[in-house]
Length: 290
Image (cartoon, rainbow, N blue to C red; front, side, top):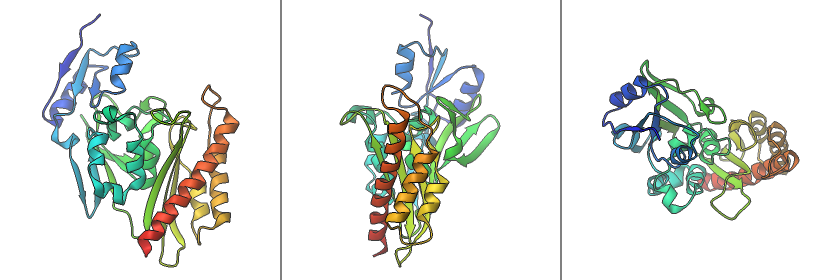
């Protein structure tokens, strides 16, 4: 067995330098996915760079601009912030669904994003909130929409020496609320067969003025569904608009047949979950307009 070098830098610049210095170096944040890959010999890095000691990656701040979530902040720590639950209930729900209590003590939203699993729970929720990713590397810092971060199963836009620093989520507009739902084969601690996230904004009359709809586990990456969002916008979200959003979401899904579900089944469930998530988000938004 080859030895693995371990480094725990205290500064972001040092982490970037280390990652850039060794081809195939891997980041250790929570390690809940990385350790499994190591034990299964799916990866054999010669360098692990632990990010838990870098202040920028473990910081959480919430102000008038919105939420800034360090990439290494654990799901358990996120759940300690009740203001996050109030402003972004869908994101809070998605983080709460990841693994067990013990796993949540290590797993992070940033890690869930970087692992680039099509079935990651927090990613559709991030897309629905309009989240953006702050990436740093040898060439400097760049910010991009969360929906552009993953490029395929297990693949991201990160180049050599680059890492995800934080996730930035804008403060919701008045009358805005979100929701995330998933279907799993078991009652808990399983991977999503389908995931759906919806964010809506209602005006004082109850009309939907803005919406974002995202889906997971039914394509190579989690993705936005603009047609489903458009179906909700422009009037009071009644049965017809909800059914149109569900049809659009099901039609946009690109699932595969596997032991966890057939293409036909997953498309059907995508529509059902999208409608249910929209109904919950709409009711939450109504509460915020009263």
